[in-house]
Length: 515
Image (cartoon, rainbow, N blue to C red; front, side, top):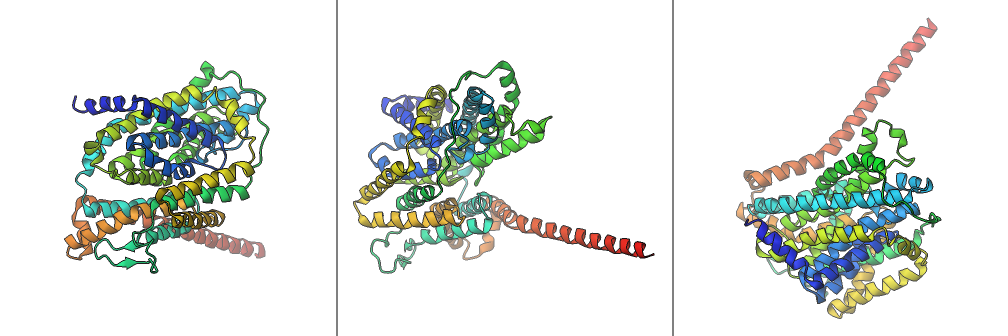
């Protein structure tokens, strides 16, 4: 009964009129952002960060969370109707969703996606409800050594698993760690990398970095990378899938819920990887894999279920360990810090209203999304007709105004412009900004925990291996760092052996011909 009391109190928090309103606003904005190609939830949350100053912490996080999982729903609409993935996690939905639309089954595809998204999201929320307190209880045993190892592992996993080349991701993460050191040293008070600037004496604020890299940077990049518009199907009919379609997709929905939940927890995982893994799994399991890419219902239901499950479960490491699992969660981490709330093991005990209020708001949000996702299709398709040349300047202006209102400082605006240009150049040359932001967020935790640990261990780095949890995390870190190199070395050796064998066979054949 002690477990259910805070859960029930969490529903009373969500059902407050203001929190319900912001939950609705969040999911509607999320759907809208999911529909618009290019401007994802990370960019939107970054742009809206200044607005969270004026509301209560639980209200702000409920809205931002709604934007995140609402975008997973919205991205499906354009993937199916226009062959334009509005969100990265909806890319694989294009393969079969658009083919179903061409066959006159757009309504069925959207219905399966909505049902799968609702089931996957709800299953992940239930898992979050029961698993998060267990993880938080386990994490209470964490000290500086454990947090050092966990932060290091989180940065490495995101850098090695995220999109793009591993080398570029690691470079981006290294830049993020460097930016985290700007300002006064917490232990000695010495200024570092400030170049005599008083504005940099207290370090670089998270908000200008986020608004620049994800907000202004995305706007500049998307203006250059124009998306080709496709003609949408004339109408959407038969939204509710038939019994045979539901039966065909039920296994994919079940597997997508489980797969997405666990991939969302992993650092570097998230909705995009979960949707791709689900599609690959369904195609591999299928008795007729050739159906995929030609309108297979499982190719829509599985990935859409997985990406919503992963979007929800990625809150587990954020809220219980204080470790963001992906770039969007890093922005959520920053939003919590702005509100004076520190995510981590103590959050469940010290701030149960916020913790359970945010978790339980997802139940309400998923119901709202299921109700709205299909009736609003026509409105969202019309929004796509607004030219990027009109939307981009308005969004950029809102971003810069929001940056100024934080501290009424033009220096913050200058930082947003600088990081906006940096974000544009990073995207243009294949560097993902996610590892940079995540490393910046975790940089302070990593440095302070590492230095405290070394003080405890008397400067002996082997002390990390004397504690079971930190030793286990460091072993995992070493394996993640070393295994790719071993795998590529074995692949090269295998290729060399195969080439040598081929050369020997060719020589023997020539000898036989001469004889």
